Length: 167
Image 1 (tube, rainbow, N blue to C red):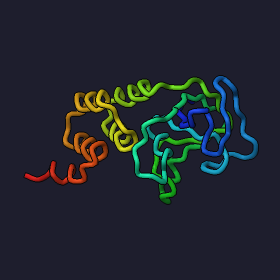
Image 2 (cartoon, helix red, strand yellow):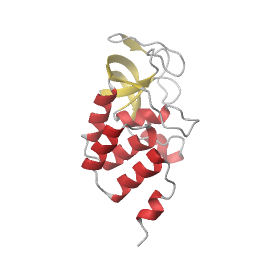
Image 3 (cartoon, helix red, strand yellow):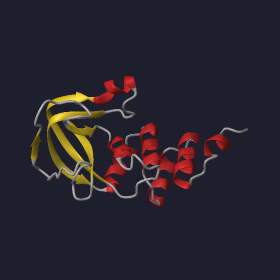
Image 4 (cartoon, rainbow, N blue to C red):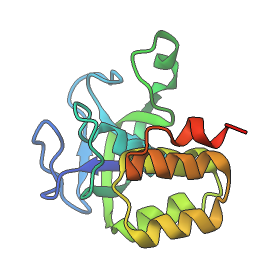
């Protein structure tokens, strides 16, 4: 299964586990989503929700890698029922290979070209966008909600949503 994982610039995770491109990693112990396993998402924008989780600041610099997961794979969506997690499409596996580091442009194009406004809005909420990204989003998704997301999250306009619905 192909997916995406957020790592630090030096290809370590939040627990300081170092990863290498092309190396196969296998889990020690039983797979337990959120506890033990190689976590990844099928959506790159979901990985960004784990960056600066304690901060409300938008992230400007991030490293997302493309991964191939195998072995036993468990989906975390079932944990949504008890509100432990607020993500979708996140999995844990017993085996993982880091295939490549994606450039910011590659990540943006994957999300933009998904033609899914909800996915692009998650990106807007997480990342400090540059002018090219903002203009590209406005061209592709010229709707009230997406524009309000840009105004609110990118320009710190707290009235963006309420203003858009006043007549």
